Image (tube, rainbow, N blue to C red):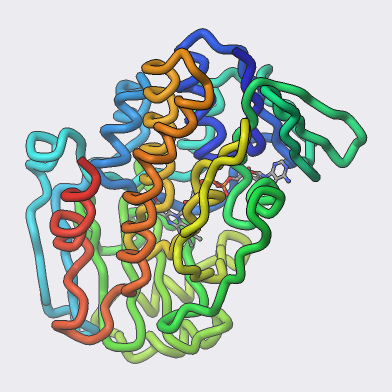
Amino acid sequence: MKIGICGAGVGGLSAAIGLLSLGYEVDVFERAPDVRETGAGFNLWPNAGRAIYGLGLREQYNEIAVKLDRYIELDPEGKQLFSTDTSNWPEKYGAPAVGLYRPDLALMLGDAVGLERIKFNHDVVSVENAGDKAICNFSNGETYEADVIIGADGINSKVREQLIGGVTFRPNEHYAYRFRSVLDLNDVDMDPAAQTGFYAAGGWLSFIPIGKGKAYWFGSVSGANTFEDFIEFFSSWTKTPIPNTLSNTSRDLLVQSPLLDVDGVPYKWTQGRITLIGDAAHPMMPDMAQGASQTFVDALALRDAFANNQDVDQALRDYETNRRPVANAVVKCSQKGLFLGRNKVDPIAIRYQNEIEPVAA
Ligand SMILES: Cc1cc2nc3c(=O)[nH]c(=O)nc-3n(C[C@H](O)[C@H](O)[C@H](O)COP(=O)(O)OP(=O)(O)OC[C@H]3O[C@@H](n4cnc5c(N)ncnc54)[C@H](O)[C@@H]3O)c2cc1C
């Protein structure tokens, strides 16, 4: 079996790891020149950990991931609004909630696939079905044929566009941008084993340790389209570490991402021998920190569908039947926003347990 994967992000690399473990011939095509991602931190939940363990990366993952034992929410005065102990989540859910440095994750996945298997500088421009094969065309004029092509090319997926047409994103009703950056753990007074967030109606900012003496912060403010607006919102929160953190943030390390909202993907993920994984299949708001987590779950489900079926088309059907309803439920869940004033939305640690775990099983 020969499988081509478009995109070497979380989805492409984790799919490749699962399919290589079945002894398949796997080629990964990535338009960027290398796999070293920029970016700050990642917050992954137990469902991600379980899938990563299932893909055979338990040891490597535990080495780069910082286990979060507590989840804490405070107000702009630094007074505690909510706190919960998550230290027993490995026993309860099979894996911890963690923080990690995004480039560490990219390198872990890249090493597991083998960099020689990834064809960099390969920009996919179109895909097509051809009987029991699928073909991928690149901007450099090359073509590639395989038994199955997987679109793992992210939120603005070209493969998805070819399969089902474009997706129209709309501005999120709560927040337009997410700002984030990395800092030294010593530069902020925080519990080194906790996710610590500061919340008020209209804006929030959270800190997560990511290992090697580092942490990352991330947050959104309603109506803040620039970093200056963002800083301004928090300027009076002087009893919290936020004003200092923001004024010490180097612009070189600042990441500003637009928040793209869409009502999931009610259409099919698979057409003939071409299917989708990750953000290409289920673009979602990052508020539940489930985008990558769901992507790891996809990769494990894809591997299992092939492991359990000799028939390629049946394997693709099983993968989609298993994953699409769950992923779309998580898309809906992620649209509710974070703290919008007390009582409207529960803290994410509670919502993970009440809304994600029950569908993730
Ligand atoms: C601000 C923000 C914060 C987030 N925080 C979290 C978090 O804490 N936890 C979490 O679980 N999720 C988080 N997410 C979501 C997470 O980043 C995504 O869900 C995850 O990266 C999806 O992986 P992917 O492989 O599908 O897509 P990507 O990671 O986007 O990878 C797609 C890859 O395809 C390549 N590519 C694109 N087009 C082509 C082409 N035409 N040809 C070849 N290659 C191509 C790209 O270069 C890229 O390498 C966050 C998202 C955002 C925006």
